[in-house]
Length: 142
Image (cartoon, rainbow, N blue to C red; front, top):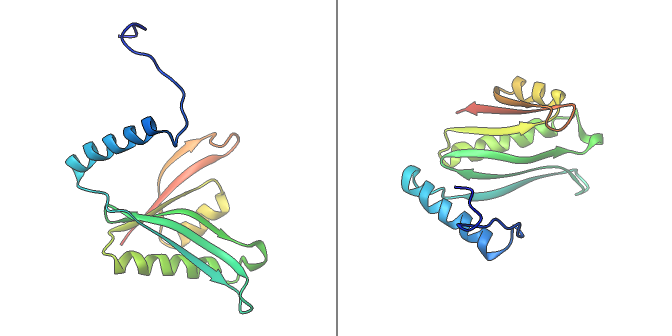
């Protein structure tokens, strides 16, 4: 099957029309089996009283799960309830949109412990990703 006369493989930009077509075609196949993703992106921003951004959470809701794609609290605001408040608001959004759960991943053992204290459970792990650490996946059913 690896006959170069039958096909070739090219490295192209992710934004190319060929790459977009691959994503579109896969989306159609997946939707046929599991239903449409019906993605809804969102961002939650935490601000200090003076208005400065002290934290944020970016995510997407699909297939009735809320995915936390990025989550950060500025170092001076850590340990002051900002992270917990952001996760509480994300969970409220998940419940308001009839989600069955929330999932996320982290490289940080401290963040992993924080999520576990908030009811998340480890769902998987990839060791040495990034090198010298582990990528831990966590989920919380609602």
